[in-house]
Length: 372
Ligand code: CO8
Image (cartoon, rainbow, N blue to C red; front, top):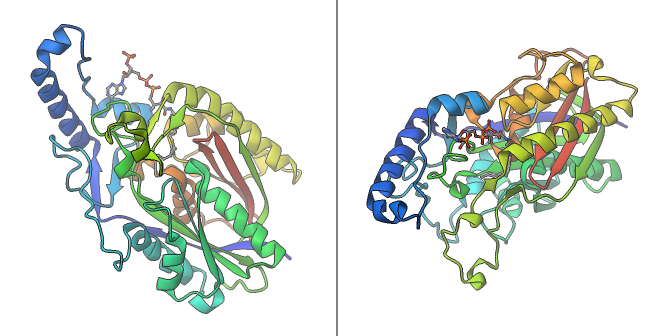
């Protein structure tokens, strides 16, 4: 029997930050830093901080704005990171709150109640604690019986979780799986670094995976197959981990935050992603021309344009390969699913689509789907 995606959900955080606001904060911070350290910069002991530009950001990335879970602190020139107060152990965690909202939306779309679901996967680029799993917190809050676990695969966390859900339903170890991607990226951003301060936003997406015989929703997609690929690279990295305090390094050490070699990523990942997708489609005797919609990872508009051009031999239209970067920015693993959530209802039975993530790891994950 076919395994299907029967519903998706989206949690959009309550605040947004424009490029202009970010640039104003970074530039004020750079002026202050350069003034305070003028002598050391002059002596060559410190490097002056470079200024950012909203024009550059939009042209280089396609990003105009991003949603953030908490805005306070991000634009404070003397702080430049969000204020997210520590919660008591008996309060619902921030990521669980985000996840629950997206999950309820997906369950409503798939016409599912807690009794219909028996597994919860929370999969994202970071979890705010190691244990107990955020997934188990969410499972309990939603009244779901069964099991839950967290998994981390950076940019491909969402697609890799859908692949695990597909396998679990295929194997009969779960009847319906709730996959959730609460991407709380803002704590990991260096808002004083012009190369990366604009890239990320916060969001949560959720997806229900089940077998066709239990599915009863409007927007339902057969998953024809899944494909995963990884290859180790330090070009996108955060070194922060549970052993951080034993390393005796400054907690504000830059390598403990998101950092990348963006140019190399661009050059290496685009051909890998296009080849991966072509190979995956060929399993079903399909080519790019048979695909009506591409829900691609949303890291950078120029990457998406290049990959779809490699696949189609021409520019993809905005309808064929929707972009959500302008509004949401890069939301780690959630981007391709935001695109799927917003731009999949209009397709007709028999239409094919590809959901594909690519990025840190490196990791690439794809699902070839067909509208029921
Ligand atoms: N304003 C003005 N100028 C700038 C700015 C700025 N903000 N930033 C850089 N510049 C300057 C540079 O310093 C450089 O100057 P010079 O030529 O004098 O050296 C010039 O502009 C050009 O810079 P770049 O070569 O860096 O510019 P690019 O055109 O390559 O664009 C990008 C930079 C946008 C980063 C581009 O390289 C890119 O998109 N690469 C791919 C990146 C990517 O996809 N990364 C994956 C992200 S990771 C992910 O998706 C999930 C990871 C896990 C989640 C993490 C959550 C926090």
